[in-house]
Image (cartoon, rainbow, N blue to C red; front, side):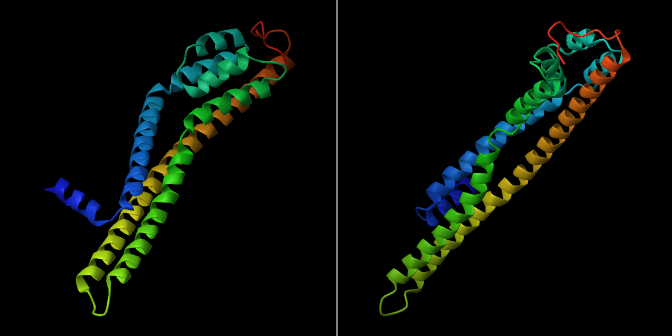
Length: 216
């Protein structure tokens, strides 16, 4: 019953419903993909592993920190590992590159969601214009109530569909942006801690144990 109603409304919405449907499918695909990504990322986050890595660095044992960070699925721990093992002249630069990779991975397809939010109501507005234009074309000498109501119904359905897609898209866009902002904060905080600990270890003298490829 519900499926039949949806199909009828889709047909009554006119030809503009097809591009609206394409936008809706794109949005659903991206939302599902991003939801799976963030769910998996949440399960891979390991505060205990991060604490162990930071504790090793606090003890000036950066080799142990690298060993404990190796193979971790936590993006913050992974950034620290990449920063300490792929230093090419600058620790800050290595951490920045590693953090950028993590943020780029986490921010994938956000522009697609934003585009769907913009396109859906525009297509709905286009459907409104097309529906009303169709109503006026069908009106001849006498007022054709059925023709006018059909065009207005087409306009309203297209508009409602476009706005509905945009509303759902805005919700998930803000949700994913919040997740991304939290990850960025964690990465920046960890990178700052690493730089501070490395600087302090060098100032304290020769007790620090650095990886072989580690450079200032």
